[in-house]
Image (cartoon, rainbow, N blue to C red):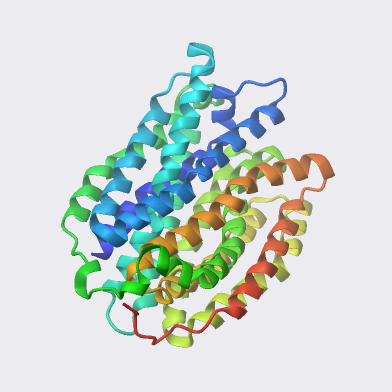
Length: 410
């Protein structure tokens, strides 16, 4: 059952974040502009478009999961991400079909965003509900670990393509290959999810904890959850941007820059599982809180060191350390939030909290930091944004109750 959730989740995040890793080449293909910076800004701006559909996907697919079941909702998200990714990979360039090309890309990003907005809630609810007693944190943390594995694989595929192809070939068609590679996992993900058990109907939810009434009753908790998600989201998407940042700001070769993706993905796998295990052993709040505090303290010095010493070792160290801290905290929060919600709105509430937090701040992160670097001339500007949002998340974490050992509410 964990494999079914992980396979689908990894596929969806692989497809979604691969766009970020190849933003430079996608910008040249679909968004020709007067300068490379403007082309990149248009490309990362369209990356943010996918986030606009996330709240809608979270609300609709989350509600579907709370009414019809976790399994059909997760099968639906697989279908949507497949459509969006296939469309993006096969769309001709701007030079071939003109303005229709960027229009199609935007539509594909919206479909991908709809799928990801609806994935987190049902997947988190399923893992929490299916986990054995005392292991809910570890089970739920596999969701983040699968995202790290997806990022790691995306980076390895990118590095392989970069070593085999010239810049002209990468720009012409090479960037499309990683998207097509991701689609090879679709049959396995569908097969596993069709065979997974259903956890929604194990006990009937209380009438006051269903639909609008339940969401209204738990609106304060969901609002706090949005702020908890905020810090991790900004840190994650700044780190996802490290490949583009290393190429465009630090002037590092693309092959080395893609190494940041691989080390960040590896740190996410290890850190995610460590965060889940620690949250089972030491509690959700402390595991959420202290890594986020450390991120706020270390982000600026880490980026300043990287700017002063733009070496391979420094790039990989900064990416790995900040990614590990981010995901250890996230590994605890991704189980704490659904644990605090009743079964009747568990998928919807988690979907809304995650999708709204990611949409408001994740979608704008790469565009904002690109603009900040260009406007201020300070290559360490992304770190200050990480600090500000981490402080907000710390305050929200302090306001949440401890949920370790708490019986799941119906």
